[in-house]
Image 1: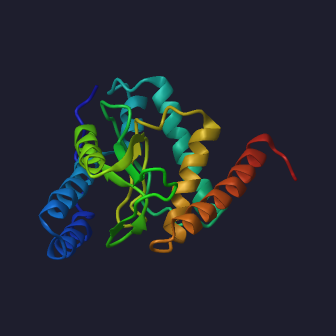
Image 2: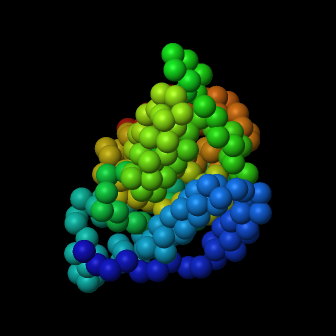
Amino acid sequence: MNSPVPGPRWYKPACFALLVNVLLLSGCESLAYYHQAVFGHLALLNNAEPIEQLLDRANAGESGTASDLQDKLLLVQALRAFARDELGLPVGRAYSRYVELERNYVVWNVFASEEFSITPKQWCFPVAGCVAYRGYFKRAHAEKKAASLANNGLDTYVAGAAAYSTLGWTADPVLSTFVERDEVALASLLFHELSHRLVYIKGDTEFNESLASSIESYALGRWLAMRTGSQD
């Protein structure tokens, strides 16, 4: 596998400003949490390679990129163009770069609730608002947090996630954790995550996910109709 090519640094001012903001408002535990969140994401961006360059090198025989991966990256390019040109989604630079991760998930989310309760514990963040999970870039950190919550009497669950969205704050890259999905699953994921860049109501998870799922369903139908030549 080729060594990753560092991506451009245009995204760092936004992330740095966000980091300063949350650090000024946080206690010691939150300092550590936001540190791993911001710098975990920056590590992804630093290791991201422009898809166009990766494909150009593959076509020139200068890289060992597998043909299956090349096909998936070409599909991503087509999906991005469709989302931008046909659906009017704010694609920007999102999913224009690729990161190879040596793990099955990009983050691990911690969920918790009071014993016998179906109401999840909420965590509140400066950008996303209040959500029912807390994400970590290292599984060990997620499990440590879950154990701490369990010691305080909460029921906990840790689940890996193959993708996440920064809601347009940075250009989210394509990750090896989800790029190998079949066409329908990959298209659904990209349309869903791009929808969060269009509309996101801080703290209203139910609305945000419902809207993104609706746009995803509509977009996928349009995409498949285009692919099959349907006029419906």
